[in-house]
Length: 225
Image (tube, rainbow, N blue to C red; front, side, top):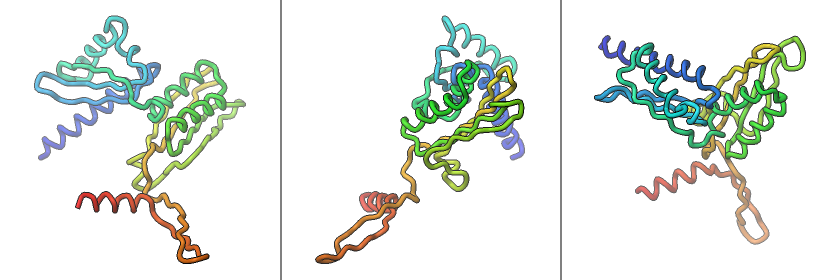
């Protein structure tokens, strides 16, 4: 039992170290995450990024060097790397955080860059988003500015289910800027309610409060039965 726990703990630690290394090396490629799967012939590594071409490199040169690095320094057995694009990059907090950090390093004003990122996130269908930029923004004294729109859950079950959070760092002449983005992904919330007016009789109206998600779940369960 102890050996099993040690194995899974070691595998999780390896994934965390690989994830941190890839995030540091390929943030310009809008790195989004990695999956490591053990196979009978080696280790399958799936890398998600907004710009996969920058990770693959010209003629696959970069990805070959990466495979050697993963095998030599992280102990992955015969790594087979697959690079794929993110399905909805505007709803991925990590991709948007790296995009914002890159925009700041290119010289964009932090408010303008934050508003553009917020507009793209909300136009992609997000229920809400929060962007926090910290550092020496307007003076020598460090401070932070927050931009929020829609619904952003900070606690409860939704925090793990539909809220995506990421942090990025931008290196500028005044110093280090920190970027934090929270995105509430599109999903039918169980606490969403609406008011409906139903006629009770001639000249009478009755207002009822119904839980939309509860009705939908009841209909689904009834269809299954």
